[in-house]
Length: 295
Figure 1 (cartoon, rainbow, N blue to C red):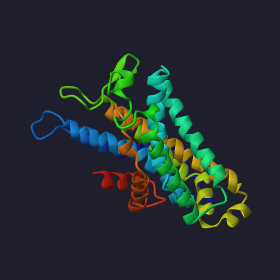
Figure 2 (figure 1 turned 90 degrees about the vertical axis):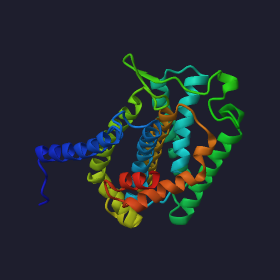
Figure 3 (figure 1 turned 30 degrees about the vertical axis):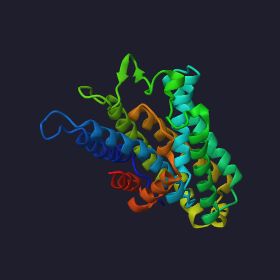
Figure 4 (figure 1 turned 180 degrees about the vertical axis):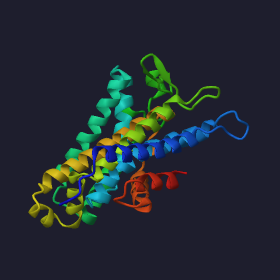
């Protein structure tokens, strides 16, 4: 019989993993040499790394676990970023709701791509996702709605080059843009990253995660083991795209503005490099790879 770990043991593992990530977050906020706190550029870098880590975790599930190589993760990252700003500025949607909707939009975009490429594997799937990344970047750069040339939001249309800070329960989550302000939004992003990393760890070690490993080894084998191959591929693609969208939303909150130049097809290539370098299919690998490549 297979040994089933006790609930207490599982909780202890999760707490230990969360404390490890929380320690990294504390180090990120450690005061500088003069004791006056981390610099603005340092906090932007930490926030940017945190945002990219969400996308890397999703790509790890897709590529590292399911064996579906994708260069399009940066495209879904961009979709989440622009969707949240577009909904908040052009349509007056509350920022929190805009974030939720942006993540959903990214996930739905992933679903559509997965349904259209469900029979493809290897280089064919990689090329399709690369085309997606190029198309998304072209739309962002050339479509006037997204503020061509000057980035988004377009100062001509909105009278500002920055998004207002996100407000939660009456507290504004300040981005790392001005001296003398604590970059509270970065702390929230890192806290959310700890939660997502723990959930990712549980997914990887769950029966659902093991079915992704079977899918990576052989679709025929997975089908014989009772896995609905098509549904599972679409599900993991959707989950990966939604996590990328969440990362894009966090990117917006860190910099409070967007530019198409930040979302070229090379972003997706770099994200795949992060996963491979850190250790595809491992729990901590995408985080290590993201920190190394971004730093």
